[in-house]
Structures are given as C-alpha cells and as structure tokens.
Length: 342
Image (cartoon, rainbow, N blue to C red; front, top):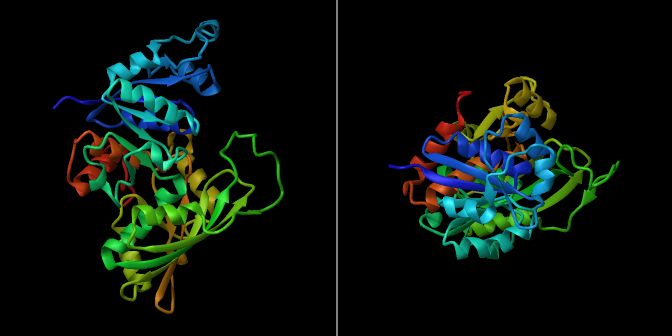
C-alpha cells in the first residue's frame, strides 16, 4: 500500500508539530508545508536544513524569502495538488477560506480547533468517535483542552459508563513566546459553561457536562479537574486501573516530582523531546478521590502538542487507512512512541 500524502497549511505553533507528527508516521508522507511570511518558525526550518519543502500561500511575497535564502518549492495550490489530504492549522477563519481551495481541488482536509464546527463534516476525536470520521472529506479537531479532557472521560466511560461530568479548567493564558495577551498579574473568569464542556457533549452526546474556565498568567499547560458520575460507583482503584491502560494518559504522582504544569514541561525537555512537547496528558494518581458516588481527578494538558495524535487518527479515518478504531489509534501511538514509559 502506497503512503498517504499529506500537506500542512500554516507552519506555526500547531503546524510545526503536525509536520513532525506526520513525518514520524511510517505509512504517511509529508509532502510539504505552506505559510505566508518568513517567520521565526520558517527561519528555524531553514537553519535545520529545510527538512520539509515550503510552499507559499496567496499574498506571500517571495522576495522576502529570497532575501534570507529560504528556498521555496511552489505555490499553495501546487502543494494541494500533490497531496491526498491537507492538515489546516492556519489562524482561525483562514482555514474556512482555504477550504474553498480544497473543494476546488477535490482534496480532503482536517481543521484544527480554532475553526467553527461548520467548516467540517464531523467534529472528530480519535478515541471517542473515530468511526464517524471514516471516509469523510472534512474533519475538525477538538481544542487542546477538549482533546485531553475527552481522552480521560472516554477512558472511564468505555470501562464503566459515565452519566455526567463537571469540569474546572485552569487555563494558561498564552503559548510560550506570545505577546498579544500582554503582561498580567490576575486571574480572569469566563462565562459558564465553558466551550470544552459543550464540545464534550457534541462528541459524546450521552454524557451531560458543564464547566468553568479560569485564565491564569502562565504559558506551560492547562490543568483540568473533573468530577464524574458513573453509571455505577467508580472507586479510586477502578479509575486508576482504567487510566493505566491508556497509552495517551500518563499516570504520575506528586512524590515523583510532578508538582504541576511546569514539571511536565521540564520533564519533556529532559527527555529530549523537540520543543519540550508531550503528546500524552498527565494524570495525577494522587488527585483521584471518591466523593460520595462521584469520582474526581486532575489532568495536565500540554496545549501545544496534545492534539497531534488525534490529528493523525483523523488522517487514518478520513483516508480509509483503518476502519477499526483501536487498530487506528494503536498505529498512531506506535509511530509517536506513546506508552513507551510503561
């Protein structure tokens, strides 16, 4: 079977990681990436020897790239022509405009969480509703918080059945290196319910969910607390047993040194992971507590990289590479090295 050819639109925070993720998949080929300007990310790509071919979107000034010696392989539409599927990580709203080109060239596409749900045929999560993405032309991924949240809720739901969840998200205010949110010394409340709770119900309509979100002036990782009501009483040991089986959930403890969000980022750097990325969510075993008939736990979301595995799942579904959900996620996990800590 020939490899599925993939392109990436937008080589920013997510686009870089999507490109790396595709490049690690043994049954996929990264044809190239597309962007608008010679950003620091593109300049770093050049200094690394241009491991990925670069294409320019409409409105890009090629002379700016020529001036700094960045080679260009062609136009955005030329990239689209060469691929089976595009991964669109353009700024919010741009992906919807790009869709017109994907339709014109009869190519499939997967959009990231910043786009409206209406851009796609299916709001997609690899573990929770893989089957709905099979053979579809346009998928949209859940946001970083929703992706990690659903991993954990779906894990318990498939093991024991979940009726209702209540979540609190302690949200990092901006990605590392961002300046547009300014310098703050404050926490900010969002109106309830948070979109992550609403999105969870869209993906998993049999579960009632609500949530509160608090913005915090940090940049590395979100923390989510979850209170879940099972169809049966779920004990701490039952929850722990389920979480330990999941290759995208890393169960940790405070005594090991995982004191908070920064601990995960530092550990990822110590592992030598590019950019300090972690594909898995962290789940504190010592946060799992029983509250009456409910079970409560806390997870860490590495916001820059957590959606990459589910995007690879989306390629497998949309391109009919695998119709079995568990086989599909297992292939993605294998190539990304998920579960290797066990």
